Every structure is written in structure tokens, then in C-alpha cells.
Image 1 (cartoon, rainbow, N blue to C red):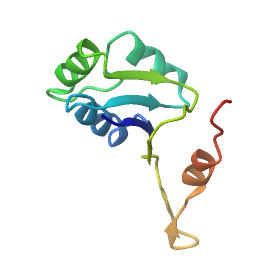
Image 2: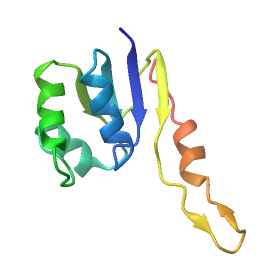
Image 3: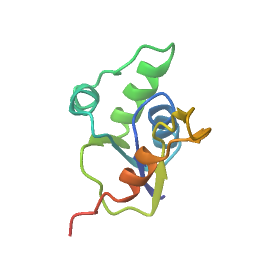
Length: 107
């Protein structure tokens, strides 16, 4: 069983985290938004989508998912953060990816 750290708990990262957690992996979901982390720690989805609350409930019941603000040491890291389009440069703005990859694992 792998321990997976998913950075970004939005519309891509959170469902991915919950699917891994409900399929035999330990997952820590990281987000810089305190409201998102607090909502997840309270056992509630930060956004509404059919079936997702049940996925969260199942992952919590299995003790396979938890939300945190700080990166932890894990076997796998998955980055799921926004990459908005920069129309001036005509390419994806990778500032969120870069800042996420620069987050340090506490020692």
C-alpha cells in the first residue's frame, strides 16, 4: 500500500485523492486554502458534486484520507493545481505548479 500526497484539493485533486483512498492507499490531501482543509477535516466536501460526499465518507471511515496544510513525506507526490492560460504569453501560467513544487517537507 502506497502513501500518496496530493497537492491541491480542488475539482481534480480531491476526487483523485478520494479514489486512491477508497482503493487501498493512504492519502494525505494538501491545500494552501485553510477553509478547504478545515472543511475536509470536518468531514464535509468543500464543493458540491453528486457522489463525492459518499467518497469522502468512505475514505474517512477507512482512515485512508486526511487533509492537511503542510506537505508530508510520502511514497508518491501528485500535483493538481490550476494552470490558468496566460493570453499575453499564449501559454499556461505555471506559477502555481512552481510554488507547489517548492513546498518543503518538514524534517
